[in-house]
Length: 73
Image (cartoon, rainbow, N blue to C red; front, top):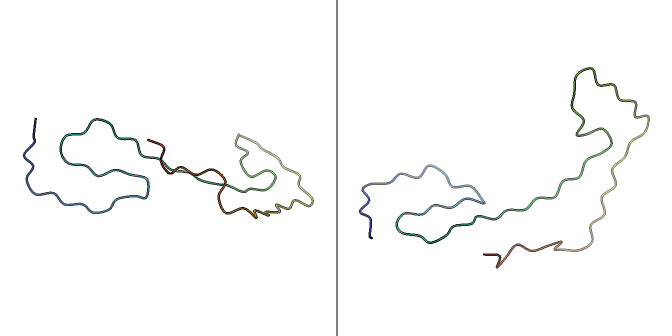
């Protein structure tokens, strides 16, 4: 059934978001990310002690696409 919508103000729309007004069968936003982090980067807890004398994160990514998300509906 059609919907009647009045005035709409959109302040911002994110990169993996959907703005839709009206009837819809299915919506599926998709996003991807790649994270590089060194030793001890994602540790959490109370009283945490780290001892990293020399920690390096070397990033060499020669390919242009790792896994595409285009066409995944």
